[in-house]
Length: 87
Image (cartoon, rainbow, N blue to C red; front, top):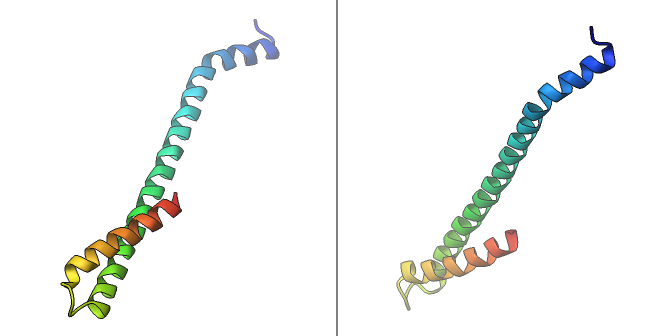
C-alpha cells in the first residue's frame, strides 16, 4: 500500500505530461489569438486609411485627377503608416 505522499507523486508522474500538453496548447491558442487580433487591427487601419484617402481624393482633387486613383494611392500610404504604428 502507498502512503499519501507516494500516491501524490505517482499521480503527478502520470498526469504531468497531459498537464504540460494542456498548458502548451493553451499558450499556443493565446498566441494565435493575439496574432489574429493584431492582423484584424492592421486590416481595420488599412481600410480606414483607404476610406480617408478616397474621401480626400474625391473632395480635394476631384477635378485634377480621378478620385479612385488618388484615393487608392493615399489610402495605401495612410493605411501603411497606421499599420506600421499599430505593430
